Image 1 (cartoon, each protein chain N blue to C red):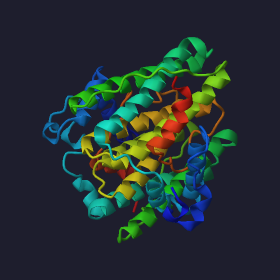
Image 2 (image 1 turned 60 degrees about the vertical axis):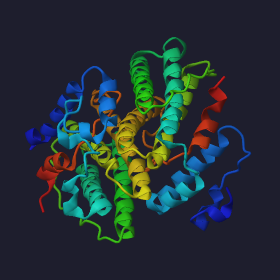
Image 3 (image 1 turned 30 degrees about the horizontal axis):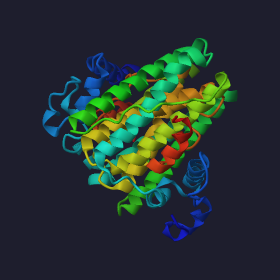
Image 4 (image 1 turned 90 degrees about the vertical axis):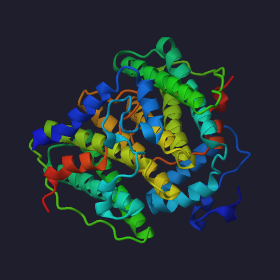
Length: 219
Length: 212
């Protein structure tokens, strides 16, 4: 499971590297026209460009914004369940436990907000997936948390440009930066760079994100 | 901005006074939005915020120039801090890292504005009033949190999907800076589950005192 989990991370690291030292090039690639999205200067695959015509992977959760909201809701359910399990595991105490509880509480608030959003869009909120996480020791848990948060932040970034409703976008942005805060905090705890992609965070498409959380979904 | 424009009467307590000075206006709305977000969820707050905070109608170039001004401020602030803030060890590394990121944001925004046929704004002169590391950290936290909220506020007004994606990639980095600075400051890295949006006028009010 751990090795499967590493895939998206190394892929993103690769993307960061192939984004080259010229970070402006990566930015401009992101600013480029749709026509360029298949062969970006950043050297990323076509699927990392959120503006390249929607992300059909979220369609399994619903049409348009509803699909994106339910996709995000599924990820938030996983994050909330993960932190709840970690709190129960007894692996942490004191300030660390407090931080984990706080993050977990924030993920739970994201779940609530997205559930409400799905309903406001006239849809049915995605069901909570049944999840299991490896909780062997504190270090491995913090590493997993870091991976999950960095992936979560990249997932929101990957969807931002696909969202149609300004209200849904405003809310997704309000959540996205909080995921970024969590990710940086955990990276800091792990002695990893707080901005692993450099000055410009990289998006992740839904297919990549879903594949990397798959090992934790048991039903 | 009058109270009847509010989407939720419960939120009248966070109506802002246009004439209030300096930081208070943005602080009030920031705190209000945070509190309301906690109570009602961000999707309840979203419509209120969008109503209360008149969105920029100036188009993407104006938004990018506005972001550029903020990035100029941050770049100058961290460049100065290298010799002024008394940062050591971990904090010194953080200051160096953030300075580098902000400079790249300035370069990317400048290039993008030109690419869109616009004229990048000139760098304003800044005057940062602080005397020690604690004063530096306090300002850094204000700038980073305000930066996050500024991008989050501008996001829905951005017309181009490509510019939106790029702004998103910058705001996530600002949020990461904000978390790291807050930790250095002994604060929660993520004070709330939702980073509230701020509009241009509020952001300008927050940074005005530092523009000479």
